[in-house]
Amino acid sequence: MASDPTSQTDAADTALGSVSVLNEDLRRRMFTFIRRARRAVTRDEAAASVGISRKLAAFHLDKLVDAGLLRARYESPGGLRKVGRQPKVYEPTDTQITVTIPDRRHELLADLLLDAVLTEGADENATQAVMRTADQRGRQMGEAAREESRPGRLGPERGLTACERLLDRYGYEPVRESPTRLRLRNCPFHPLAAKAPDLVCGMNQAFLSGYLDGLQVNGVHAVLAPEPGECCVRLGPSDPDREDQPTQDH
Image 1 (tube, rainbow, N blue to C red):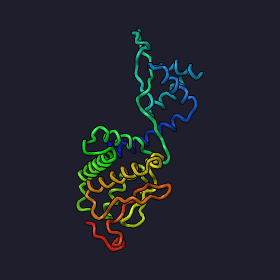
Image 2 (image 1 turned 30 degrees about the vertical axis):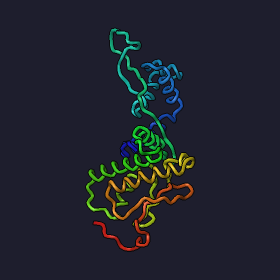
Image 3 (image 1 turned 180 degrees about the vertical axis):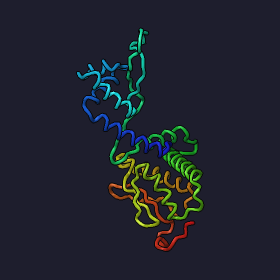
Image 4 (image 1 turned 180 degrees about the horizontal axis):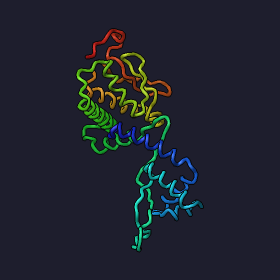
């Protein structure tokens, strides 16, 4: 939960584009050859690795460069200086491709757990440290979002609208059940949540509660309301008995 959700969404879009580029067999085989070479590879070498012409290889290599999977430069292979124009060579970038449907964010849990281990106080146990870390991270993100958008007073309806953007980017798949209630249709932490529901769901609730506090949303709480196949947390009114009464968001 340390990462910017906008950058995570961009990364997901990039991953989908990269996967589509690698769907072509010759292209995927050349990409694998270049990754395993552990050095810059010329067009001729790439073409020979899959048995195609240099011109066709150049077409596929440029597609891999456009997708951010390879980078290209002009350099003599092996670092040898030769007379004349240096050949174009290709090498892999540091791009990591991860695509999951529905969206999963296991790295967020790992990041929180690591922070909790590194900052655990003498007066805390491990679970308390995790909950504190999750709440702090959510609060920091809420404060940053409020500083960026400067939304003014946020009652339940406008507050949930402000939250939906973050929740969607983190893979929660928010659905507006009513003007003051959000159901989260996807658990970004499945199947780990099923292995340790008390811990993972507690972290999730602490993170979302912290975000609401940091964003300064009034009249909405993150409550545990597990449903099969969905997130264990729901965002709803602090006083459910008053949910249907008109709200005044300004």
